[in-house]
Amino acid sequence: NKKGFIFDLDGVIVDTAKYHYLAWRDLANELGFEFTIEQNEMFKGVSRKRCMEILLDIGGIKATQEQFDNWMVEKNEDYLKYIEKMDESEILPDVNRVLDFLKKHNMSIALGSASKNAQPILEKVGLLSYFDTIVDGNNVTKAKPDPEVFLLAAEQLGVKPNNCVVFEDAVAGIKAANSAAMISIGIGDKNVLSEATYNFNDFTEMNVDFLERLITN
Ligand code: BG6
Ligand code: MG
Image 1: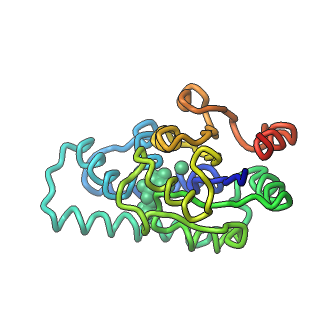
Image 2: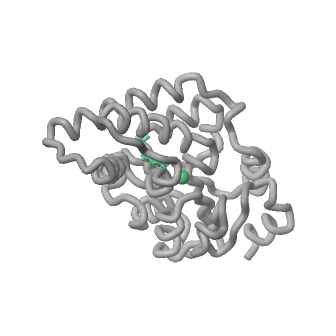
Image 3: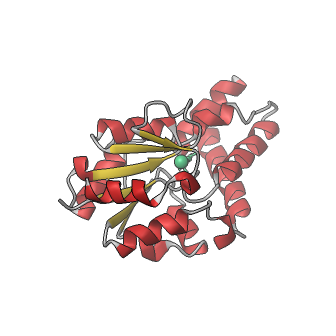
């Protein structure tokens, strides 16, 4: 049975969640309110448009369609400045080890991200060549927790959903993987990601025994 391994990007492969946070905070401050790191938890895994809606809710701001669109562009331009200088030093610990293990065993690997900036980020950190396919915010219409992004990734890999494993740092992403009938692996706080099939704080905790079981079972 062919297996597929689907990685989320932000917060799993690279710690870009902090840059998303800074860019949303810059916008909130400009609009005259605070945006905390706790509130940022709701933004993880969620599409840019949905984040904009939540931010305006937090600030109690009613926007015209034009303002809404302009502010989204502004946030992204700000975010792009933060990620401009990214390089391989920002790959999260042991991501390379896990990707190398999967490659060595000829596993199919996909990216399943909500971000429209996924491809340039993978290029900047030098990981693009690991991925057999990339499904991101440019290819999907329904945001996580909808399973669309992962189902499309499985289809493009030619692997049945129940033979796929998803690595995720967001509650919305774990929910998406679970509704796609995939094995979900939470990377981060297990109290937050309690719905995941398995939990790890980060990839350094994932030993070879566990990886071997994943590729054989
Ligand atoms: C997800 C992030 O990966 O991508 C979200 O967790 C972000 O916080 C979403 O909003 C969309 O990203 P982008 O880069 O298209 O604005
Ligand atoms: Mg994420």
